[in-house]
Length: 255
Image (cartoon, rainbow, N blue to C red):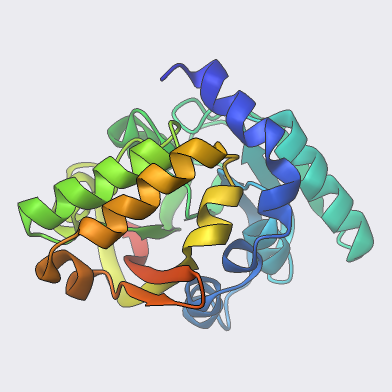
């Protein structure tokens, strides 16, 4: 999928993401706040900020926060939220994650929550984080991931792509670790959690057509026992509850 098409998807559904409970606050944001408790930063950037929930959180421990996203309607949601919460230290910049318009060694903290699986060139994004972070700067990643089992990985990525054409890949933890190490990051803390979802809100958020909703629903129904167990798939009250595995990682630029 082209970047412009992906931006259109997020632009058209910006308000849905701004009101999505799993994006406003969930375990991953709680964990980020715990990991950063006691820190104070001069300049921070939240990449793939979406409607700005993580940017708002780190604005409490940063003098300046840059909220970065390629989609203008998302950044407008962030600006609106910053005004409503009286957070004047948040500014927005429009850019793709793999091309961050900042100087080398200029940033103290980079955060990225629930966005990395949309980045077409994830390795290049991590390389950019290494470039812009000061020595011993902190990178916090929080994202849905794939199980190490190839069958489960394939099922998860396929159904996410069918639901959301902007999806690129939920990566295995082993792959994330390899990429982080490649670009000079040392993981100093990590915690596993789950992103709990309901089918109805999951498809509504990306504007899936009515006819295609039934197709996706059948994929859950037809999933075998191993898949249903791995993703906590439950059927109740005309809806489907399920959960994607999620990792939160605090990494330090070590070179």
